[in-house]
Length: 80
Image (tube, rainbow, N blue to C red; front, side, top):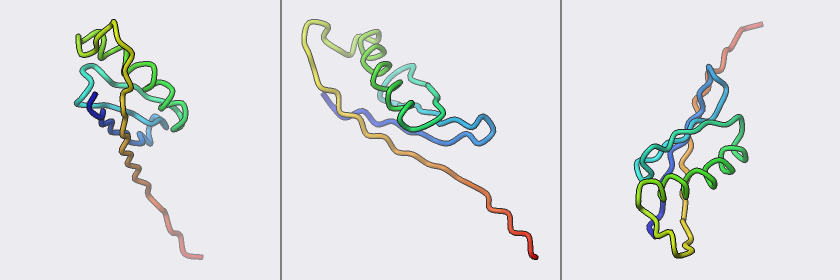
């Protein structure tokens, strides 16, 4: 099985990590922290691959996952 590439970014308004993947049709999820996000991805990716006919339902398979994350912050400086 080829490696699944997941892109995650911090949504500062919603205060959650959002994850998507071009390799997994329909994958969009969010979570408050990285561990929670990874847990959701571990459950959702096989389900979505199976639903899209991209997994053989009769065979166990390892699915390698690579997560790239990005977070942009603003630092406000106020002179004393």
